[in-house]
Length: 401
Image (tube, rainbow, N blue to C red; front, side, top):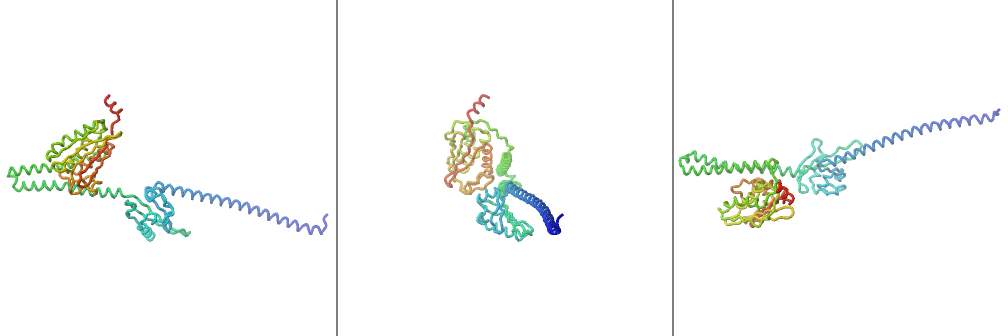
């Protein structure tokens, strides 16, 4: 049996070992608990990371598909994020630049300051930038409780075409009103004169009735050409593209206008025209050339000359009409194919409706061609349009059929 002295030493030792074992067990328990907590924390961290990644992907996807140009900035107006539309509008290297450096426009910063001070409405206005009219909207986020700095946001939408169309619509309405006012006023005055006794004077009344007939014809022509233009613009006017001899288009357009030109002692000269076939609608393509030659007749002085020529390459034919009239100013030249466009006084339309060149433009576009004009003021004008050439295989198959 152990002695009393050994027991005195051994018992405390057992107690110490037992205490250490308990501490070790408790430590292992706490360690396992800590491991579980770390695992949970890692799961939470991974979940937050996944959510953040999803948010970034969603942000990038939204920026990609938004039609507006989008600029995201910090409080110092430094650009943090952009979308492809912003890069198309302002250039590729935007990240890190300040707003004023990227746009050279102080008005945008003023809109951001306004957005920071107001919480009711998002500031919005039209701004001229990079040669375009843009609708700009500004937004500044509020500071959150965590103390994160606000984020600034600008969206820019190109409204240039809408502004142009709105202006063109207003001009068209004004021009239609002008075109209608003149014949209607003339008819009213002539009718009033007849009612006030002129009808009893046969010779005078007959002349007035002829004048009324002329004004009614002008109104009828205007209405018909507006209807024609509307149909061809909307695609309701059938264009039948068939192999057509170029000479038939040119000769068939010039011959009906020769008597009109002779009244002003003018000459319409057809220069060398290639013996080729074009893919065209005979009636509509002749209408184009007639409109252009008739315009040349109106603006060419008495005794003048109008020349019609054509050249061909491997793909298309270019038809050219040249007059020696007063020419077209540089300001008017880009707009002469717009309907009802009022040119300078030297090119007033006289008895025309102002729709001929607009109709010609739409017909040529429907043929897949181009139409344009060149001129120096005081040195006459030249009009050009193209028609596609017919391939030899197409001609052969058509002849066989």
